[in-house]
Image (cartoon, rainbow, N blue to C red; front, top):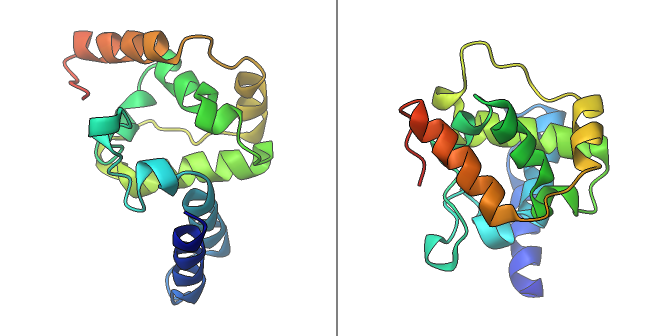
Length: 145
């Protein structure tokens, strides 16, 4: 696992900087270091292991308040070693990278103060919280896997 992470980190650092802002590069690096182990480098997850595919779906979560909160409160976010500013940048990068077409028209990026407030109350039951979000989205005609 260490070798795989080192290879991913090296590959990321060697990517050309053309067209990628420093904040995006930093967020992508944080994603690879903290999230790609489960969600894979392209966000496709490992559905056979219960890790959802974020591609094309993540943007739907921010369409409802409990979904927006869920993305901050899941253990991978709330318990990460990232500080609140880094987590804010990472979440916004993930939304723009994995599901830009599904973001609401009035999408407002996360702010550090929002992430700080939400992160202070992590989820007790992740599966139940996700099920609630998925049900509420389904009620709006938005199917989530």
